[in-house]
Amino acid sequence: MGDAEEKANIQPGEDKTIPTASFAGAAAGPGGQVGPYKLLSILGEGGYGIVFLAEQQKPVKRRVALKVIKPGMDTKEVIARFEAERQALALLTHPNIAQVYTAETTEAGRPYFVMEYVKGVPITEYCDTEKLTVEQRLELFLQVCDAIRHAHQKGIIHRDIKPSNILISIEGKKAVPCQILFPCNLCDLHGKICT
Image (cartoon, one colour):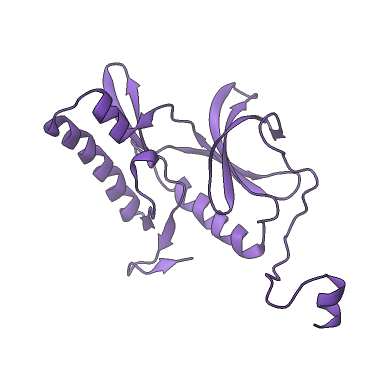
């Protein structure tokens, strides 16, 4: 073990990435604050990010989904992937894809983005609860396919399409599928995944 590793108390074979920001000033979770957003509850958690239900308090009051890098996971590599993800999501403008509102950085230096909060149920749950016919299910599925087509045309691959990532909300009397596109990759013009 070298002197630098010994001083840093890093054992051989351990991850030697150094976080770009400290835990200080990090929003602890529900009840915490990130900019003008009050964190209400956790909607989901992935490998390096946490998605919160949050309430924007100004300039308008509304509920949003806020994704932020977990404390301690904010290495330069993870931040680069997160930045690519939020940039990719910002390119998507489709009625069946949750819209990104803004992308900023916490006081602790962790990037986050805020997007439309979709209150709904997973597509399979909706179909079963409403006892939809095959034709009605296919009608919803075609809308999902159109949203995926839109993402592909922008060079974005979802990587995690599953019922829990496709929520059905009711607008008027119509069921509207909305894809929550959190885990995605950018592709170059030849379809090669860029990380």
